Amino acid sequence: MPNKLRILSGDQMVKFFSALGFELRSIRGSHMKLIRETPQGDQMLLIPRHKTPRKGTIKGIYNQAKRFIPEKDLKPFFYTE
Image (cartoon, rainbow, N blue to C red):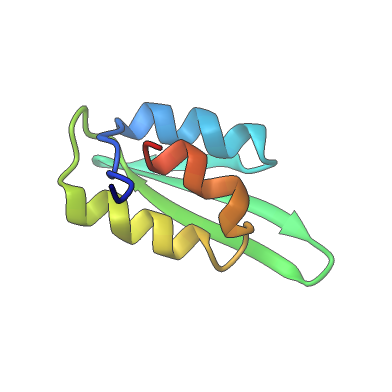
């Protein structure tokens, strides 16, 4: 059986990414900007501050985060086994 995408709140995602070195830099409206500074440059993620974002939004954040974080570290948080 394939893995199933978890329904995560924006606050849960911020807590997860904060543990990986991202900092909450700003909140504008219902969106939060997380930034992680590296020698190669800043890495930025935008997270909606919703209690139950749509699955497509969660999948988009997952794909966005794959640019900066290895998939083996992301997948257990975003998908069920």
